[in-house]
Amino acid sequence: MSELKQRRAELNAEITALESTLEQVPPNQSDMMLSLSIRILEKMISANENMIDVIELFSPSMVDTLRQELEWRKKQYEKLLRNRDTDDEPLTVPHQHARFIIDRMNYERKCLDAIFVAVVESAGRIADPIKIFNSMNFHKVIHEVSFPLFVGEHYDQAIFDAYKALNNYVKDKSGRADLDGKDLMVQVFSSKNPILQLNPLQNESDEDEQEGFMFLYMGSMVGIRNPKAHETIQQPDPIKTLEWP
Image: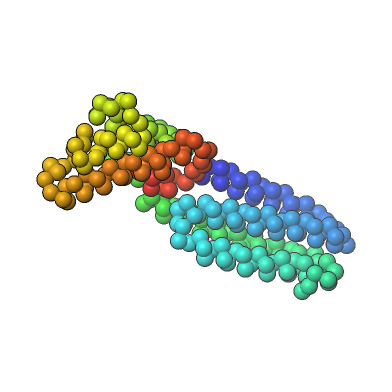
């Protein structure tokens, strides 16, 4: 999130600098105006795409529509800016035409910025990641290892350490420090003579529940902990991080 916001600020600063340069270009320097106008257009499109990436963290349902709209407008403005219908036509752009395109893109960037502010403020009231984390009532063992990492935006490590803590907690509770990962979960939660029994095991439903949790814990070791231990995995999204547990 912080990296996306920083990139947004950098793009806006670059756009402002290019616009300032464009204002100083004499009207008869059409090639320079065209070059600068295209660069500004490209930066504006990048700024819009960056803003959509930020919005996606808070409102994924909006993103597809915004991206389709941006792609359509991108093609329209590129065509207008180049002032031609085919690649064979010469590149020409009068000063007032370039200015119109830049002003229009600026207007649309401000509109998207307003959407961004509205979405983030709304999401912040109901979907603050730290508030959600605390509302999920994780076991204290998970909270102790993952919360500081989550607050520090080390989301991938927060996930990995949560499952390491789970593995070690099961070892401690079962007394099977000699086992690890999937093998540990099979032995400890098996519906046949489990070390950690989750229910009375008096009927088929009880056995199914016991076995189901065994498979869940096995899967968490094989599918989540192990890949994160052996591969470099980036997780920049706090909301998606909270989906792992």
